[in-house]
Image 1 (cartoon, rainbow, N blue to C red):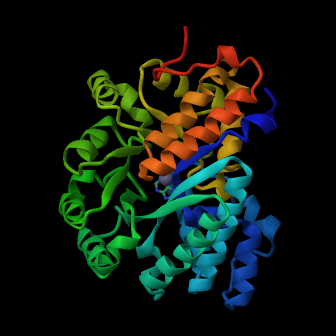
Image 2 (cartoon, rainbow, N blue to C red; image 1 turned 90 degrees about the vertical axis):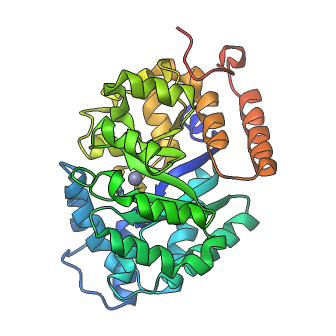
Length: 349
Ligand SMILES: Nc1ncnc2[nH]cnc12
Ligand SMILES: [Zn+2]
């Protein structure tokens, strides 16, 4: 199967930080437009800094770069460019995280961020890519601030799909955010949480049992706990796995050592996502193609990965049916279609 065909697989992207789609060229473009001084001489200079040794080493640069995002229109452009690139790599539905606190801390109103991203999503929907927004709380900032942020957007709950939890993981257990997620539930919002990226399997349990998370973002360290694996399998809890991110942030030494095959073999509902594609070397289709390159045996499970992403999304039943029909079409245009895995979460042995 060609790389181009793999990268055209229709999917839903469920783990994507919009601020992580800020390409270096756009950092410079917006810095000029908004008169922001940058500590980098050139695009190349900035790109050279993309050498991360941990989640924190990435987050330091990620938060610095987003200082160039200042107006509703900046967020519209950011969103539209992501949706265009994602569409080109097969994405037909995107549930997008935004880090409101990283912007309000700089004096940018949360509603400007929200409105700019909604402008982009409305334009995307007219062009065949649907989606929604997930307000993600920064777990390394005070819980009270997360609650205030949620309350400040409570009157806009109808414009949000759900809430999430991200930023530096170790030392900031999900348990801390129990009241925030309880309030989000009262507002009728879905819940997801990053857990088990750098942090332990215990954080995944907390995200499920204390926050009521419906999906776990990353979750790869769940494999260290057989009881947790059984829980995820039994309840069909989706994991939004981000392979290129895991390698770039040194969570996994190389793509060839990624545990995706293990996760699938254990019957876990895995989805593939790009996390922060501008920083990690590729969008969703690039993640898929990289995985198949590292694990040729994954090819028969591509259809399963795509169907998982649709089933794990918070899209309407009607939209899910449309997305499954697009996957049907992709399968019928695939070589060796008789060999493709069509049911179950695991690979044929
Ligand atoms: N991979 C990641 N983990 C936690 N927080 C993030 N924010 C942006 N990317 C993230
Ligand atoms: Zn993430």
